[in-house]
Amino acid sequence: MTKPVIAVIGAGLIGRSWSVLFGAAGHEVRLCDMSQAALDQSRQWLAERLPAAAMQRIRFYLELERALDGAAYVQEAALEDLPMKLALFQSIEDLVDDDCVLASSTSALLPDDIFAAMRRPERCLVAHPANPPHLLPVVELVPSAATDPAVIDRVAAMMTDLGQDVIRVQQSAPGFVLNRLQSALVEEALRLVASGVASPDDVDRAVRSGLGMRWAFAGPFEVMDLNASGGFADYAARLGPALAASAPGGSETSAWHGTAPALITQARRESLDIKEIPARQRWLADKLQDLRRLKQPLRETSSEGALS
Image 1 (spheres, rainbow, N blue to C red):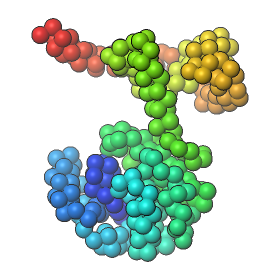
Image 2 (tube, rainbow, N blue to C red):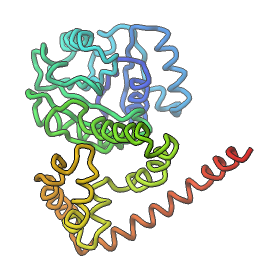
Image 3 (spheres, helix red, strand yellow):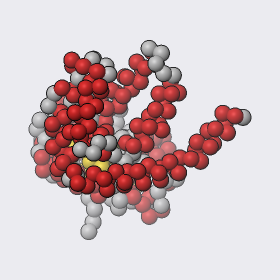
Image 4 (cartoon, rainbow, N blue to C red):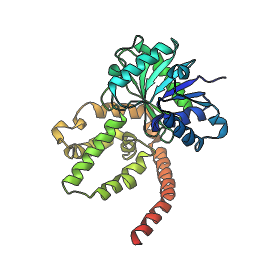
């Protein structure tokens, strides 16, 4: 079965990385940029990362009209500039077929703003990757108020076929999910350094050798679910008050006192029967042991560097 033609608009790091993903998955890719130098650099960069067969599926264009001819899906990866994106998407809409889906890679702009001037906003959405998308297999799908849910379903299926883990953002909010989580962690990391609680190196260690290792296999809610014999509800009852007290805004404003713990408990039990927690705990322990072995040569190299 022939896969749909993909147009990637913007030949920077994100656009190139998207091209790797789509090309490796068997799509014909049209990579478009107004800079010939950017296209030349992209050609070399892609050739170093893709087998010859996949590389043959990628075409390079200066002209937007040629790149969009026959495209079923457009992945915009231009600069984070709202007026420019507004104008770009209006130009794209004038050139594509009626059933072509239009997606932006934006990490900072809201879909209702980007697609405000579109005649058919129901086919438009944000598909925001982690950077770079060919190495970090996650993408956030963010609808505007006008996006057709069927379009989200179509794009989710395509992204899953690419090997991406799909986050369906239920409503548009600044930072979406990935950047809001990252911003919260980094904000507290900055506070720890500024207040003298920890050095920058030790904050990095806390994430690299602690939180990050567990989160590589299980998100924060699953980790908490597995860290108590009675699951997340048990964890929240025993440790929630202490965690609320250590929250940046203090216990009074902590989300531990809101509706979130009950919602998370329900979601966890829908995902994993409480009787299956011990088996999942063993699975996570095995994965952490594998990761620890994988990281050991890196630790040894780091130690040698510190002693030299």
